[in-house]
Length: 471
Image (tube, rainbow, N blue to C red; front, side):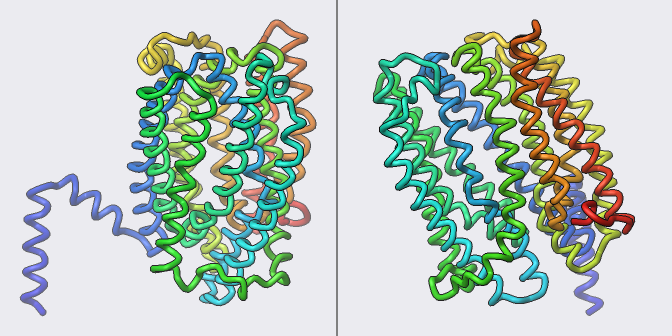
């Protein structure tokens, strides 16, 4: 035994001498309890995956703008925003599954975990099939050229495009549950890997379009929508027939008596998500309707640039959702306190990053899109402020989501929706602010929400929460 110990220390010494930086990373990743070790490894992996994903997304934007003109690109962004609303029409079942699956695993109840998976697949499939049938009926009567504020010449093309994108979106809706299962089992890096591979496939398809066809919204929408569906089909088949075979969805495990357990939490997430969609996605529609589809493009470019911070911060915070569920179920609150303190310190670094990004925003836009679209500086300043508010809010929201204490969020979200649209229209049309008025409205409604969410976190963590603060 002594001989093996000496041998082990010898090889460790060699590794330190060969590459001290790699050794420090390995040492850091191995410190802490099993939950912390798993989190750190996932966060590092997600950083690498997201880094490639960001590059792919930027290339997609640049190639897509080259393939389409700015007006058609604005039409595509607006249409995809509208279709994106339906991503939350699972009435919160995805988030309900995420929490309940993690709780079942923490309690070592594999049978219940499989019931939750199968039941969620069953209910969501019914919702999706019903939605597709309804859309097939009403789509012929929808004039998408009016909704998107564009030429009637594109009416038929936009109708077919909306149908294709919607159907593929719904199919992806169900297939994406494999990602929820992996995230709930604290393996979010794998779920992010699906997105990366899907985006790479979409980029290749768009590149082929630029070489073989003239600009076509129809072919672009088909390529972007089909790519993730292909990847999720392959991923679901692989995992549910390999290491997650025990949790493979089955009709005999669909038990509707567990719907209430999923829905009780899920419906709250659903309303919160719908509120978020209305606030964030409707910004594109408000700009398109009050100004023009072309004006959506500079706003969207600036938003994508600053949303890099949301993506990066999300890489760190999102994996903690299921970890918080696990820790709260096991009553390990000291671990929660330590993590939150670290996240708040990290937010200070985020602020410095946002200031730097704002100073060099115009240089980045010129490098990214080659001066094809001009983005006003005020867009960058306001979006940096918006991201700062959203980032600090996400520190506390992630914890509250993980433990299912979201009733206060629910009420706040409804109030935010009631205020946002009239406030955005007022600031945009009744003042000289123009498009920046939309961003200012978003900042205002989110700022007040963050204040209440922060208070709730500290009440719960100090065991002083009662009434709505503890629901």
